[in-house]
Length: 202
Image (cartoon, rainbow, N blue to C red; front, side):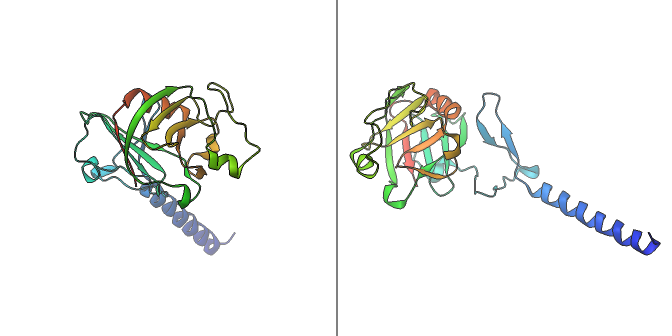
């Protein structure tokens, strides 16, 4: 290899290495809490950067008047659920599944009206109409139960925030109207939320 070729090769290696370092520096700073929840950590200088799917921290004040009984914000666009405890000492950010289409999506204010461990699943009449082959009921605790291990029932009929055993659904438009979380995340949220927790879907 000639000196000219070596010089050209070294220059290319330097440039590709610099590009890789620049990309790494631009990546968001994520943190994993000891209890298994997903959290965003500030990047150097205190600035929080978005990741490629707009998964970002939000301030409760932009969406709620207060955090009485805790507050849950579901951002359908970024497919993320935010939780703030009543005293604001706890903030969690979880990836979610969201409804398949706009026609199945409901937005607005509601609240948690019931908390159920190992919920029984019954397809809604419209689900049965679209999928007549589906079972009429799947008992709680079953490994193929679409509601996973926990469910927060909302004041809107048929709408839930629940777990899922099918982890491929998280981060996608994959539900018939509900908001799905990994089972370990819904279990944590279930313990923090209470009947009366405010919920806003945007």
